[in-house]
Length: 130
Image 1 (tube, one colour):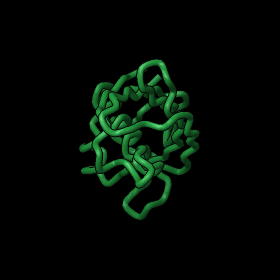
Image 2: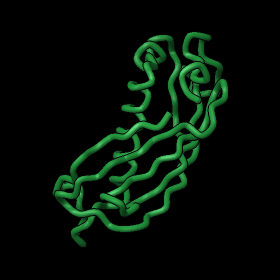
Image 3: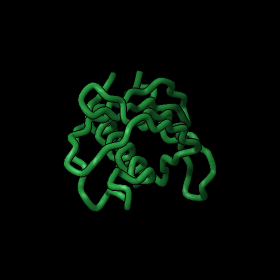
Image 4: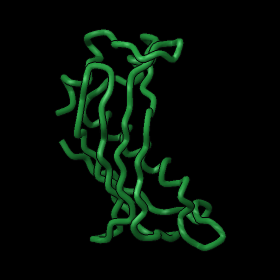
């Protein structure tokens, strides 16, 4: 499943050079992943209520082209690997046909102590994500 999320760059997200600050892209990616999970019907609030969380273990991002205030961006998100306690999302941020950034986001499920853990069966992401 691929999911697209659209957003418009806000002026306060730009740095002194006039383009989107590199750290802001992490927020864009997070927003798009949450939209992806919502579209997949995953009960993220239920996972948290059960005492489990998803955390980012590694983020590999390549910046290809700058984005500026007012730019309309689309973020395509897909799950490229899903295991019982973790996986990988591949995300591409585009302005029209231009690739602005591309990322592989490696995540895992942790318990309340922050240790990798298997969530209850009803939160097994393998059932929701290809």
